Figure 1 (tube, one colour):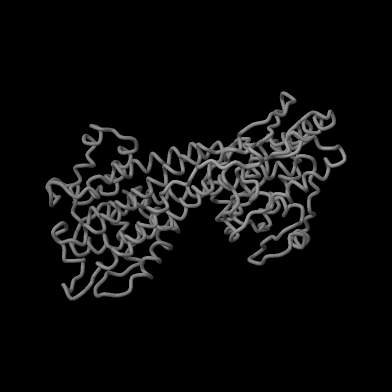
Figure 2 (spheres, helix red, strand yellow):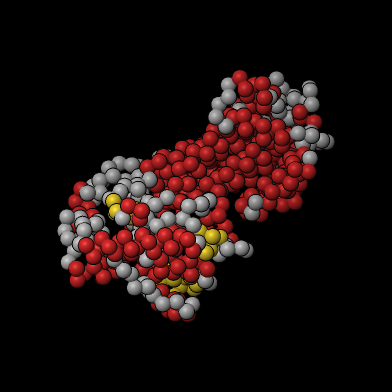
Length: 507
């Protein structure tokens, strides 16, 4: 893979995902490193002049009113890292660690931290050589990820542990084997690596990429259910959508029509019923709301990926350093909660569509889509699994609490819980992937039992993908493996979405 050039200004969630999951190498842009050097010079001039600067010549948190003696300036960064390395819990997965490192690296390159360029070069070297600090994931309340990122700071000074090719090693040993020397942090460097929202932002950006892919998968699953149900497509008519153009609804309806295009369902008189259950009739409304939530979340993530979220903030052109609140992420936390609610609605709709396909009075198909009659279970017990998954999705949609808790002697008196909002969203998405896999399996069975001759260009491709991974249910059999295989090899891999898009492009 080609190197990703990091400038501090144009990192996208998709770029971050490629570094995190696919191991794409990174390279700090030379001009960004030069900007860091100029920013660092401002820090050094303020230090030499003895100006009051938070975390540089003063203490941190409740000790902000205490001036630091000159003789401790050189050691204060190391103590800053050590004194905040308190995160607990299971270590983050490797992909998330890489995302956190990349977000912080890109933030440093925006040159607002006044950090030594050597810190950015070290993070890039760790990423490119596959050295991943062991980072526990519990310890941030969304007001800067101090206690989590401090563990990253420990790694660059040769303390803590680093995972290399699946093996955890003492950080100093791992660095030595890679030919790297631990950094000696200068003034403000410790605060620069800790005082950011890279953990919450990395979580959120990876969740956004997953959610956008699953939004398309939800459209695909709904379209196949419409085929199997022989649904009435009139709610997707552009005239109906235009009469009440709710945000996202038009785009969702247009995509569903595209997936069905070329099939018999869009021909006049093809629908069995004048009006279908809401789960089929209102797919574009609910999926449109999901698309809108995705847009809002992306808008909230981009400044976090590419802005200078540092406190204090170095303004190189003005030779100034300002105290800020840029580490605080309420807009991101609220956007994630909105997306979480939209994911729950989308999952609920998929479960209801699946149930509708199993009821003869609604679908005009055999009970539970079994070809053997009432002495077989067919897909009936599968609804218990679908509903159990949806309950977990619904539980994850409960808002992360934002109740006030004072800390740092009343100086740090607000929180956002952004990392928790992102974490529970990612857990919801794992469950949604399974829910959609269940719907796809049931919808493919309905298509086969309805003996539909002409599917849409998109839905025909969907059916082929499902049948390539899951056989027709002829007689009762365990379905756990089928569901998980489709979720992993069809949805998580991107194969389903990519195959359908290729079919639509081909016409």
